[in-house]
Image 1 (cartoon, rainbow, N blue to C red):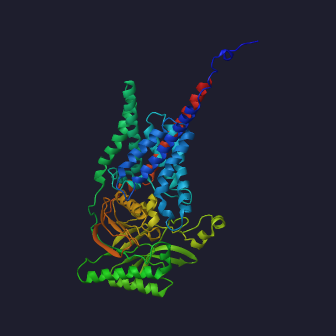
Image 2 (spheres, rainbow, N blue to C red):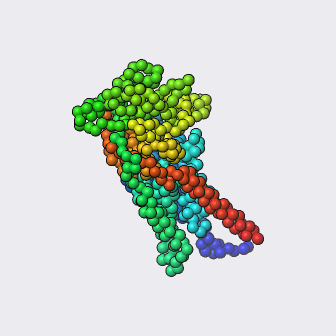
Image 3 (tube, rainbow, N blue to C red):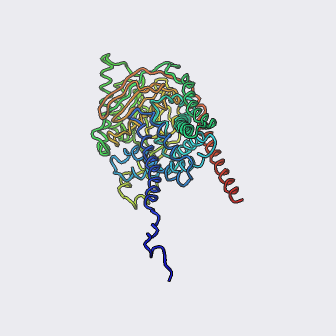
Length: 536
């Protein structure tokens, strides 16, 4: 008989304890996932109405820490969590009146672009100078989502959170792509500095190349912003104009305001006539230009004699050309139109909105959407048609560029009005649908960035607020409250020179996309070489 050790009283071998290892592995996955989501939330907090623009830097520093050195699959997942952490709170206003479904769907779709960027950043993070490649990849992701699907949705560009930031002058140098690139690069550079410092303390050796990359990634954007300051000016170049921004207010918040379209028109006419009385009494300077918001007349004045008469009476009272936002039917088409109304001649020119809003002004995939939820098809009974030409009204001898609401998010829609001779820009909007949400402040920040980008005064007439007058240096000189009837009258500078951003157009964005593609190609090639070397 064979006698074992246990048979004479020795203890049996204890199996290895796997629980702590399992817990450790689970925690190792949870921590970066939570950090990715929270850094996305931090980026959201950097956006208006808060003025915490600088929080974008630690947000990208944490993202760099989370992604650096990981595989592309991990980068994909972590990037997606960052995107959800950012877009879910940023876009909550999209569900104010229609429920959480569209809001969540939009955030989920937009986060997919960030997921792809995350995979790319993880891949290039092993390259020398990785912050440059990673920041360029972020801008490539923004460029993609500004174009697809459904003609794009650029809301939430990093540049739009920087209206109060020190990097803002870079908008005049290379537009929103260069401004956003500088912020993201600086954030990744901050992480690289921290990483090199920690490694030096642990090993006693300073990695000079990595330290230089980190320092330059922070110093170059900051230095470029300082160097771009001379491009920012509010000095009049072609005289001045006195503009009046009219906010008539709406009868009620939300989608129900559409049920009283005549009341909205009457509100704007009444506020214009009140302003005219102030002018006649000598209490307010007479405006050269009067700007009404989008949807200030949802009743077609060309088909409705009463609406025509109301607008015409208001224009005659104020004695100045008025840009009126109207919903107009032409040849079976529905148009979101700005109408130039002369106090003597009546309507003399029009601009049809070109970048119309999917699911708001037209319904993509209508049969499919109708099969899923018939409420959507009932809310958007007829699709709006797109305009084809940039809008520049000649008002009191001044070229006024028209950028209707949603269009302000699109680089091209603002730039081509300046290229067509706009001396100032108007962004007529209707935010009543979104109540007192952050949407109006996010859109106002976009207009501030556009003012610096093209060195133009920007006016923002809104049905229910916040309406504003923005100087060419991005400062808000006057603004209204929300859901009040009010008017803003001010003499503003007119400018004719074009910034480098205006002249260069899409070239800076194209260059950054090519940089991103080069870095990604280098990373893929390096990975292939590494695998081949391992097989030898």
